[in-house]
Structures are given as structure tokens and as C-alpha cells.
Image (cartoon, rainbow, N blue to C red; front, side, top):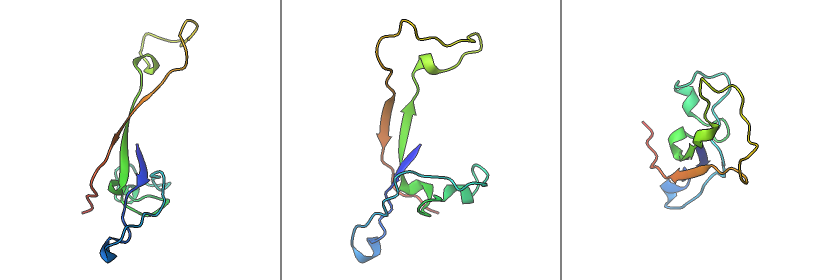
Length: 93
């Protein structure tokens, strides 16, 4: 998952200005992995400028072929998902 855009639009002027885009959105109608799909529909920046966030799905939420029903009758409290943030440097070809 790619979240906020970290593209510094004022770098050429020795400044710091972010566009405020909060989530990478692939343009609709594009093929996954295509050059067009790597540009954010909201801000126009390459996906590599967006902060990459790894989301871990708990084991009990992952489906298995032998389980047909998913019940939570005796599960304590709310379930939490671990989120690990990774910052990455822009790598635009």
C-alpha cells in the first residue's frame, strides 16, 4: 500500500513543498504494472514518491481451503492489524 506523497515540488528552489496527496490511487482503466498505472491519479506523481506502508494480515483472517465458515464467537476484544511504515527514496527513471 502506498500512502502520502513525499515529492518535494520546491526542491529546485532549495525549498520544501508537498502537494498534500494522502494516498496513491492508480488511474482507472490502466493495466497493473503498466507505465500509466505507476502515476497517481490524484497528484500525478510516480508511485515511488509515495510512502510505502506494509500491512500484515493476522493469520486467522487469511482464508484456507478447508474452512468454509468464519466465526468469532469466543474471540476476545477487537482485532488489530500491524502496520509497518517504510520510507523510501524517490526512484524515477
